Image 1: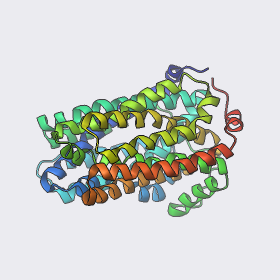
Image 2: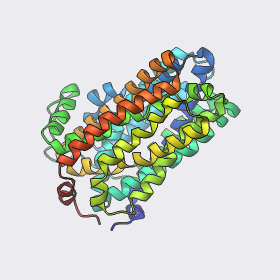
Image 3: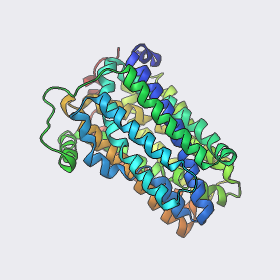
Image 4: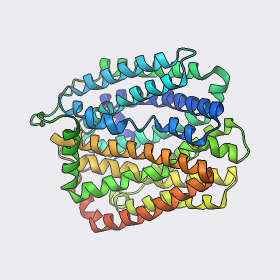
Length: 404
């Protein structure tokens, strides 16, 4: 079985991994800073959740209008351009006394650049890694989630100590560093010959949707991935839930860190079992990701909530295998747009889930809103698990490239 660290033998992967690591740390500081700032000024759970969701919802537009760039231009150029744009916009956000409405507009513009960057990165990684692809995905999942754990746990304390503007300045610097790393160390990676170039915007996103819709296995994998729209709700409600639980805002980061910590443990555990087992377990683990949130009907204490979120994160590690399987089964010439479609739907769905959770929390309280999300998610996950079982997971596993 291929080892997880084997992906580091590929230089291009090491550079992309480090660039992503820097950006994730900066992003978490920025997200927590803005969420705390809005909740402190307004006292509104809905507005706090909506601010958090602004880092996700723009993907619905950018995925449709911009992810096609990954199939038209050299992918290194796309990633560098996106990072430069994001660095400049976040630098403006870091200027003191920028009003909240302008910060919201700038945040939307920053997130518009995420879709083409992710589509280009997602299309490059299979070319770089080959049979090491899932190992590389596991490395990215583990390190990203570790950064989320550390970033979320420290972010509230950092923001309290140095201020929101300083946290945003750090985020701008991470985008600039990422652009320099990618420009200096990654090859051009032109789009593959035969990639379709005649459609743009929403038609290109529709082309990705059609490609996924024609393949029931790809469609089911997207369904499994999009279940994250239910399990992301606790993230958007971390600030108001901490208030409801009677603890200070400094515990917001700890709440946000619990689920990523579980995801790290889950990813490491899954890498210890054979790929056919991982593929077969996708449906069961998808249900297990939402099921712990049902216990929020009992309005758990802070300690119990942390344990429930950790277990949810533990099961959510199935997303690594689901995502890797989706990418490896996607036709190479359409990979940029199928990834754009899948990621656009996931990120936009998460944003909508957070907004809906925030509105519901305003009416019934944060704990009850999380419980509703968990209950709905578990029911939808059961249907997705049944659909996956009909896809004959053993046959799917056998069709994947051999792990190297």
